[in-house]
Amino acid sequence: MARKASKGGALTHIDAAGEARMVDVSAKAATERTAIAEGRVVMAKGTLDLIVSGNAKKGDVLGTARIAGIMAAKRTSELIPLCHPLALSKVTLDITPDKKLPGCIVRATVKVTGPTGVEMEALTAVSVACLTIYDMIKAVERGVRIEGIHLVEKSGGKSGHYRAER
Image (cartoon, rainbow, N blue to C red):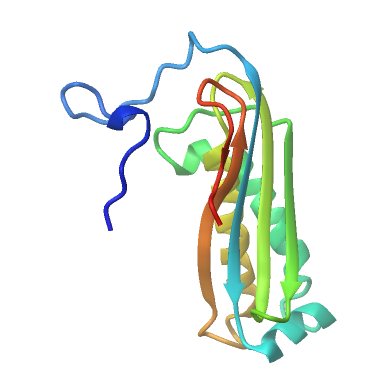
């Protein structure tokens, strides 16, 4: 399914010749910018019970995933080629076990005061936290699914506030 690009359809990381480029943000004002991203790790009820009880063989699944997500947010520019390195002022990772899924809901909040946003940092934090949960429990269940990684909300900067529709 094709999606219409926002702001007139221009891709900011492609120059007039069609080549990939890093966007010049030097003229942009440094403002407070926040992004929230979310994803889910869906698993069997028994696997979730192992995580919640703290009995996973590899140790503290949620604590390890939280640290991995924070570390990933800080290294986003090393992983995503055209991202700017940023001095992040806040990264939080909330991982909530959900018996209805069953699984875990992973939510990252990232904040910076700078000339560019932190959407990629929030999305990277969620992605790596979800992958870490998978890594920690794959010996018990190989069929775990990582789903629905998306930007929930962003604020700050020229484009202003965005909130995903539910």
